[in-house]
Length: 53
Image (cartoon, rainbow, N blue to C red; front, side, top):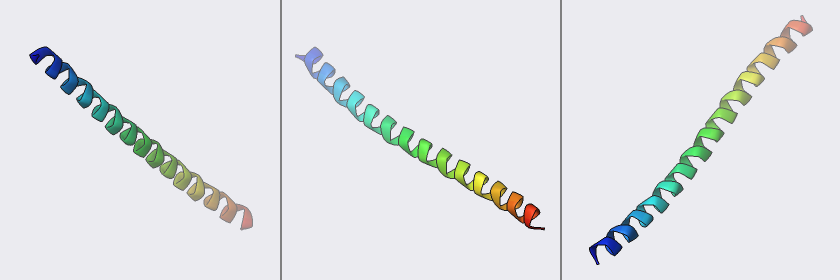
């Protein structure tokens, strides 16, 4: 009975870890995209202001 209880607990913990991992991965992807968009926006603004002058 102890083994079954431990296995159920581990699978439940594994499911929670997968969920947290997915949320962490999505958050990381969003942060990377936001940073990339910000850098691209800043570089494009600099290029446009140089060409305007």
